[in-house]
Image (tube, rainbow, N blue to C red; front, side):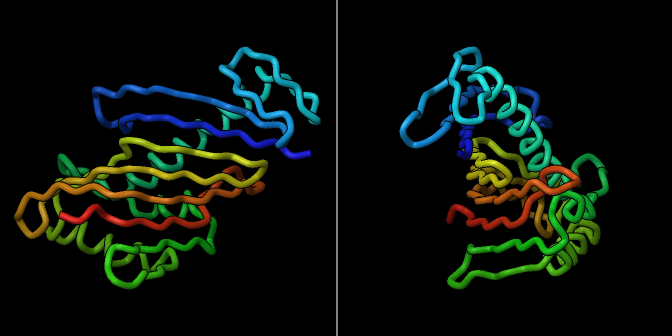
Length: 193
């Protein structure tokens, strides 16, 4: 039987000083034996793992997925003279990764290179300065070697000399690879002004 772990968290990105978090972890062994665990409860499933062991494993996976999301979002930061590190996108995604903007009337589907190239240009040519993007809330589900995360994010910066602030939502899928967890796809939509 398989194991489903769900982890929800409301948090600020690590770069934001007043970070606060509220966490809930639940592990489900199978549909007939669904139980919430708070980290120390004993929930044994077909795998023979205790609830504490499942919660510990779920926490480790969650920490890795959190790290990947922070690295992805941080790749575009160019505040305080910092140079963006857009090559991080290739580090956190599988090589065949797909990124989809669903902001306009029609989705725009990018492979990694098509996504990175225009962003690197505007983040380094002076068009987009003092830019940062951070996750403010998320809901993550892990099932074996796949995971998904729904995020709410905020962003701000100067675009062509004019200050802007925005927000939106991302849906990200992850897969466990021999090299560890990686993003496989991401779709986003911005909140309309």
